[in-house]
Length: 290
Image (cartoon, rainbow, N blue to C red; front, side, top):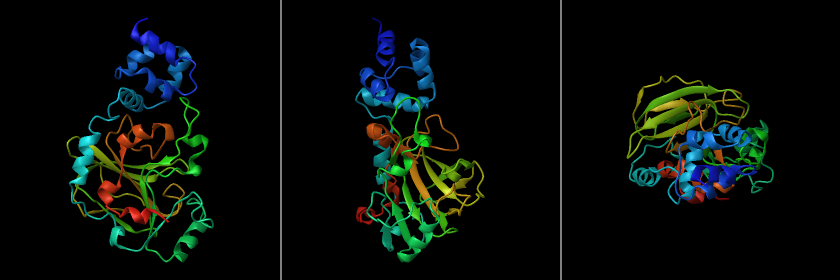
């Protein structure tokens, strides 16, 4: 049987199309349009609901390579930078508390609960930190599901820094404004800034849950420049004041917004797309532990 029809047969009726894609494309990715053309209607419709860049990334990983070809070089590039701090004073050298969500703080309200602010203030720390790679039950809802798999996206792929609303945020590295957008869905990013950066390949940083933005698309940004402030309810998507900071090696097919959480089963794919933000923030790892 020719390759594409054989693959189409392997995908048909599979409950988890991501796992099936990874298994089927051991010889490397094929163009998404070519794949769609040989799929049955139901399977094609399920895959059509997914970002095509993510599907290609899964195929690349299935073939044994990085999900994003530039990811290894980009990690090395980020490790060699001398970034400016995201906040002043720098959370790396200031009292912080790790805000882990798996029961480490049994009395901690949810980040979307207004009672969280009083709880956090009583901890007497300038900043609270939410970890990259943490699995969070708050994402086990239909908002973080898609038609390709029954699995929800539950792994947090940015770093959260909590501080009072209005706290300034500073650009850690040089770049230019790609988008300054308001994402209005409940528990989305609210005001969202995405910067584009030069490196071994173009890459991007996202700053979510902000106050209304004043930057313009195309504006050049220098390290240490103030770029935003932490937003308050509800302008930041309906969360206690914090920034969600993440690094994207590729924008896939997204614009103005980007995934902030990924699937456990695809973590090796997602971590090539959304690199560890601590390559830039340089916060000691011990600060993310309770």
